[in-house]
Length: 137
Length: 137
DNA sequence: AATTCAGTTTATAATTATTCTAAACTGTAA
DNA sequence: TTACAGTTTAGAATAATTATAAACTGAATT
Image (cartoon, rainbow over all chains, first blue to last red):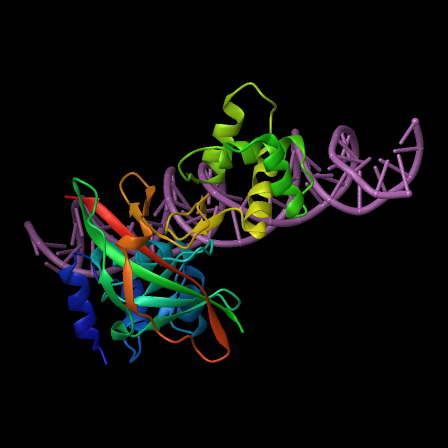
């Protein structure tokens, strides 16, 4: 469980002023046992469900972008029109269920890459993602 | 080089009436040596550049969707807001250059997966994609 | 504690990509 | 040649996201 102080430090350490809104969003995102997959829409619902304070959708977008830039969350590849994010920032892989449009983490040790290509000249590898699309049997 | 007849057969075989527009789009897509990566926007430009006939953007979208359903093209995972497609329909992988927003095919034999996870109960694997994001050195 | 001000939030407008609508058009089967 | 389902089209509608600019606020300075 992340204490408020920890959250404030996390924000401060990435040059994000710890505002009421950011603290509340950070709590929703990081104060949980399992990692969390979300879109701007689902985060907005989660954050504005309870009485608390009302956070505008623009702030949801701003904050998600700021957290992404700071490396606190990462964006996941899908071919859905919405952007999906994950609070698990370690390099890892996903199942994408095209029926339910839900993502699930794949345990890191369950994908083993034996060979990966060299990047083109002048480029380096920033990230490698494996996405396994699922369909009903 | 795909002859007009071949293209018409391709369309017919997937129950797509071979209209002027579809034939022209199919030529642009399939009558080339290398596989082709495109978005609705770039395809629209490519198709409407030359004098030929004018194809509306709605038809571009309709046709891309129809070709995708028929399995003549496949959609590629990116986290760009636009949809990217590939005329290479064999399962294969990509580099995604986040600076130029360009995709490049990775030779099939250059990625070797040694282990992949079992799909969840009731689901089967539809596709597996590896995307390697690049950044400048 | 009051002041200051850059950083932040907000409602709303704007933009971008895509899908929908419904009228006009066209390939093809009869 | 006709008839009609399938297709195309312009333009409207929608969905997700980003931009704008006014109001607000955290925190450094007085």
